[in-house]
Image (cartoon, rainbow, N blue to C red; front, side, top):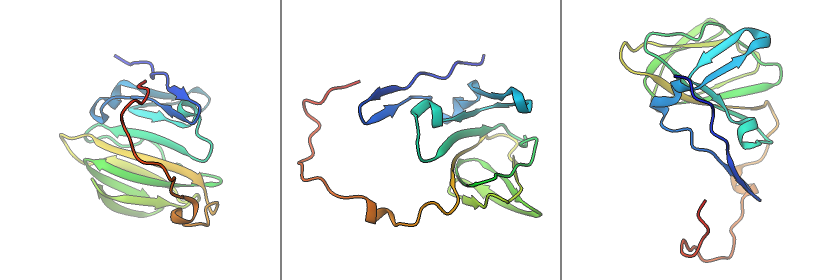
Length: 158
C-alpha cells in the first residue's frame, strides 16, 4: 500500500523528516502528471525540507528493473551516491557497473539512465542535484568552529 510522505518537523534553523528504511522506500510514489511519470520508490526532498541550494532525492529500484526513460538537465549536474545493491549506469553511449560505494557525477547535458542488475536485491541511491558551476569554494573555507562546549544534556527533544 502506498503511503503519504510524512510531514517534516521544523525549527528556526532546521527541518527533519523520517522516511524510514531504504528497504521500505518503495511505499512512496513520485508522480508528475504533466509528464506522465509515476515512479515507485522515489522521494524528492527540496519541498519537504525547504531546501534552498539543491534538490536531493532518495531512490530505490526493485530487482531486474530499469528506469523507463533517459533524461538530461538544462542547468543542473547530478551526483548519484549508491548505498546498496548493484546495477548498471548509462551516460550517453557508455555503460558502467555501480554498487554500494559508487559515486557518479553527470554533467547537465549527459543523457542518463540506470538499471538494477540483481535478481534479489534492491538498488538504493541518493541523488544530489545542483546548478553546474555554482560552487567555487572548498567546504573548509565556508565552515567555522563555534566556541562552545559540546553537551547533549538538557536539550529539547522533538
